[in-house]
Image 1 (cartoon, rainbow, N blue to C red):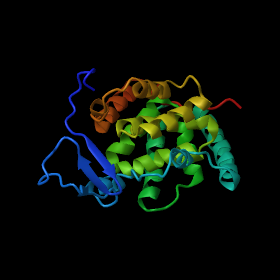
Image 2: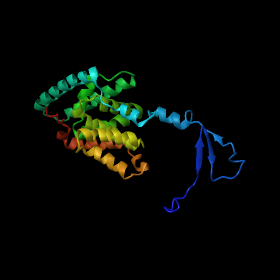
Image 3: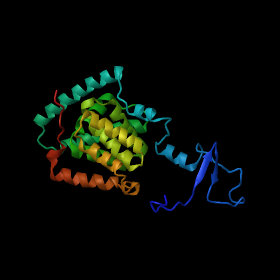
Image 4: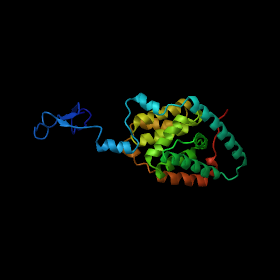
Length: 255
């Protein structure tokens, strides 16, 4: 630390629920028996739980949080995705006003989040439809910003986790990229990296995931990331969509 000109403000030893300060020699301030502490009932732990940031026992448990579903849930999503793709393909040939895609995306975003707010599982067909719609970069960015500006961060985070887990692999990168960006913003570096890696494993050129990885690898100060104004982002993206409505059109996976 001295060699790097970093001032050590405090040095603590923690062991079995007690801590000792190495920089204080006063028994009145820092008794020989140490000070008791608890990591389970502090206000910081309570705030984290309220924000949906529950501590997991290991990195493996965190990876399980966004691991792809299989079995009947996977089969159900395949059917729902095929249906959503067919519907989008038909509408792409019919719809003349591309602002339709903005309204459609926000409708399904609200529908998915309302289910979460009511403690209900998101219907597979609603999730599949939203997954197809966020293949538009501007729609991806708009739904990301609105999910966190209109709803609690806990519910919005839950939505992007669910989408990363449940979507058809062809449609996961956008959802995983959004989850990675939010986790990076919140200082959840391990989750941010895991989500970005999931996106890149499926689409190696996915730019949002590369952006998050670059932020993590270069140690961008968390205070800069924490300044993200979701409502402002939503307004800027909406203005861009109004100017260039064609950018809202979904990009269907090649089959």
